[in-house]
Length: 112
Length: 115
Image (cartoon, rainbow over all chains, first blue to last red):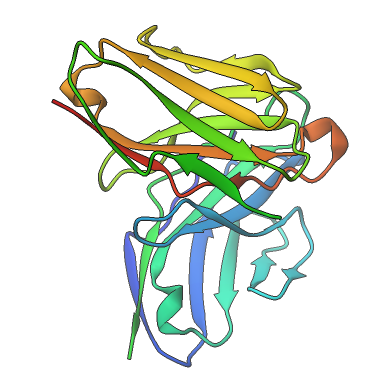
């Protein structure tokens, strides 16, 4: 699976949009971009995933560039409960590859 | 029910002890996972079970022995652990990839301390 690069940490003011970038310049055509987050002392939580089109759900939006070499996770109105480590993961969805390989992630702190 | 439960929440054991970690889900998922997470590090995959059969072992030492007695339960048997095995052990479940959506649901973890 392709390697990802994320900033180590970011701050965002409460109520503002949090934009978390991820670089995956070696992504191949059949690899999806997944985002998970891990709030302190809890298990990771799935947020969203996409292949090439932008995606939105009740938690966040995922914007993938046209060349698919980078993406941005957007939390539209950040709250204090969004303080967590956010992991961007690139993976193929083929049988026998159920594994998730977590990178170091971005520690997002929401400031009151 | 979209919950993965893990017991115990905390476990302290000596290097000569034998203990087991338990994980349970009732979402009908047929893939289950064990991850290990050291402090301030990302989770690392240990084992994957698909349809109750071990499908991935990430070269984990034999002192960790997984077991999947049925589609809802996953155990991790521990024996002769070392202090460096102290970590948060996370269980997760999902539908296997062949069925489509592979979102993994994680439990809260068992925090293990080996003395």
